[in-house]
Image 1 (cartoon, rainbow, N blue to C red):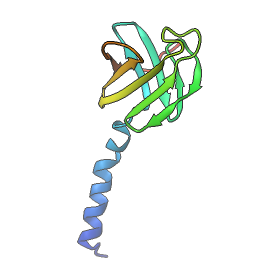
Image 2 (cartoon, helix red, strand yellow):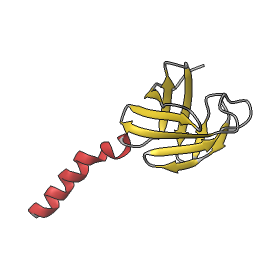
Image 3 (cartoon, rainbow, N blue to C red):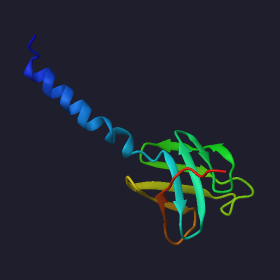
Length: 109
């Protein structure tokens, strides 16, 4: 049985890009070495640095949420933007600059 060349090329392209489809998303575990904090994003859900599970505004390459009581940024909108597969910028409303966060392993208890 012969596979048409177009179908073969399409299959190879799908295989080649399948892994990167998830790599360029803001979803996952993020750590800040500067502030020693951690957060997790899963679609519209976030577990904040203080451990609160809330909903936020999800975009494939960005996320924002209103920081709840008990957070360092309580009452402020926090915006995050993906820079590359391993780095995101974290910026609370009114901050003078972005804080750089890196992907990290999921913490264990």
